[in-house]
Length: 80
Image 1 (cartoon, rainbow, N blue to C red):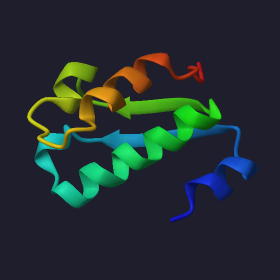
Image 2 (image 1 turned 180 degrees about the vertical axis):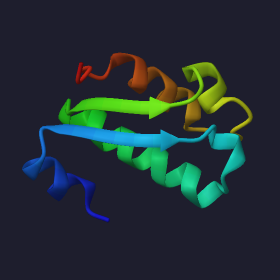
Image 3 (image 1 turned 90 degrees about the vertical axis):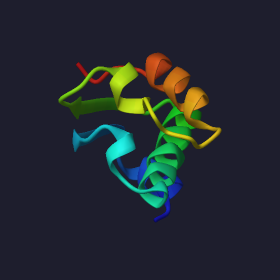
Image 4 (image 1 turned 120 degrees about the vertical axis):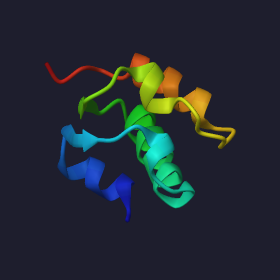
């Protein structure tokens, strides 16, 4: 998926029902990391809906980029 192209069309993004990343496979984890990287780079407003806090969301993920993703999530503009 070309997230950069989608960012040109949508100024606010909603990611709904995001599970703790440790409960999904590495491919889904990497897609999440990729989309957050693009949203952060473009400073797109994000509304992230999950049933857990940020620490639980990223806990147990072994991909090396996850701490950068955690930091980006804390810095992204909020959609609220």
